[in-house]
Length: 105
Image (cartoon, rainbow, N blue to C red; front, side):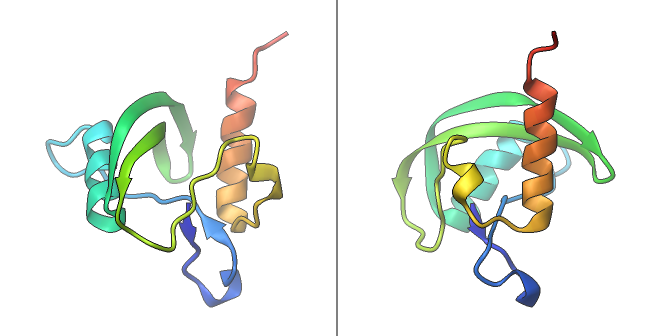
């Protein structure tokens, strides 16, 4: 997670997001974003699923970090997220994704 950008969201955390570049896979975009913006080289990356919403396709990954050079980022487990102060949009995306991966009865 990264600090949210807007004044109204000061003190909240936000899901990092980015655009997949031409000729780049979603996983390659994730790796580029993590290195370029956060200085993180993941040891392990797993595709968790995809969420379709008004922003288009959102590819959801989990990543275990290797070395970290950036300050001001937060790494949280799914169990910790309910207690984290998230931006409204990040909370909505996490809730939508969580609903989409629950087993159907």
